[in-house]
Image (cartoon, rainbow over all chains, first blue to last red; front, side, top):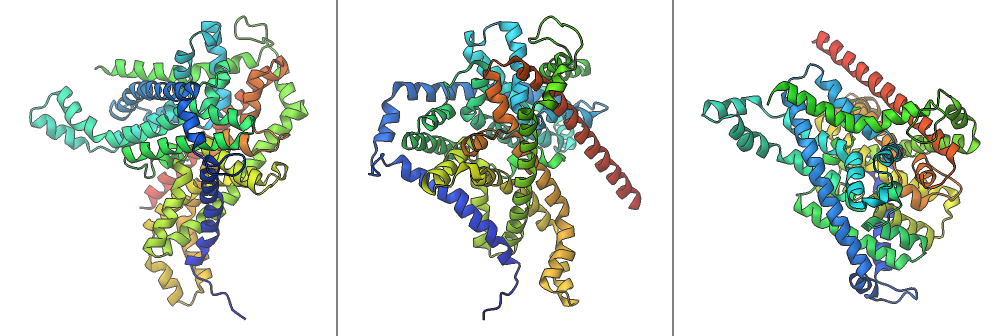
Length: 266
Length: 267
């Protein structure tokens, strides 16, 4: 009889099998469904169907616009917040940071419910300003995910670099532009990747605010409810392609998402 | 820029983040059904929240799902990290890349693709909870893996060898020597897994049994519905969760601050 010999390497086998079965296999099936029709025959019609459907193309463009504006707005609010927090020397810096991060741990659907009630008081009918509300809702949802990585990068910068720049004749402004800002790029990039992709796919925020489904992720949802697996798979595949391109452009995500999700704080 | 300007900016951002939640919590203690005129103090929302079976089941179900799938994810992710760390370089890269796929992928795509494989191809009934639990483990395990790997790298690799030289079996050496060294990574991975599972909407919506709801899927459907008593009971839920998060954050930070202090004294 073969006696099982314990080795450290073999401990990883269950996880490897799990990843292959629940991560790789679903993606292969997705690929198969995206390029077949209901009869199981190979076809490009799902792909051409997407790019010839004005509604689908419009949704794609709208999603990009929402995601870009949301990311820009998040960055515009998050960078000064993180910068002031890390450099102004507030007495309770740790507590303030926690206040910025804490919304991550409150269920997003309840936070969006709260936002919806407030926006309704201010605007009346939320469907009147769909783009504005989409951007406000997503900024509200994702802002902490942008602040944390930027804060982490800036707070780890060596202060003597700024002193050196000033000794060499730089004023506050150029020391910031030429030293602090370039060195905080890694934080900005991981913050952007934490916000941009969810903003493209997270249709539920819009759905909750004003019952809109005019965003990429919701196309999958609509195919899902119509039991059109092949069309839905193609949309998922297109999203996947966008995600891969985005990750190549930002140079991979390393472990930024772990620190971004607040794990390092607990 | 003066310090008071910086302070003002930070305060404004915090108001943006917290005003909606705090206003909702305030109104959860009233009998008002919309934000506007306050109609007087009432605890009715809290009574509804804790006595309506539908709401209670949904909350308990969400918590059980989070703890259960986080436990499985922690076991799998930790073993995976140990296995990957001691494997050959090439196999290690395979582990790392596969582990990264669900991290990078959108939850919509993860949930949809799992649903197709398990439900459409393998005909596993969603009512068995297998697709839902599998989906949440896929969501959480990679983050456990990512929080354990750094601890393994920081570890002094000779202590394991030393334990073997001193007569420990490999399993015993792993349990008594390696495990304590990576425990902090496992614990933070588990905590992260719980928060990820609690906050998930997309994976649950594609893989859950139709009669089962998590907090997220329930709230999303309820905001579109018109049942007012349920709607305002969810405001109370918001208050309860807010207080719970504040408590957990405060306690865990006080504890880590205390730990740091004692460690400083020890040195």
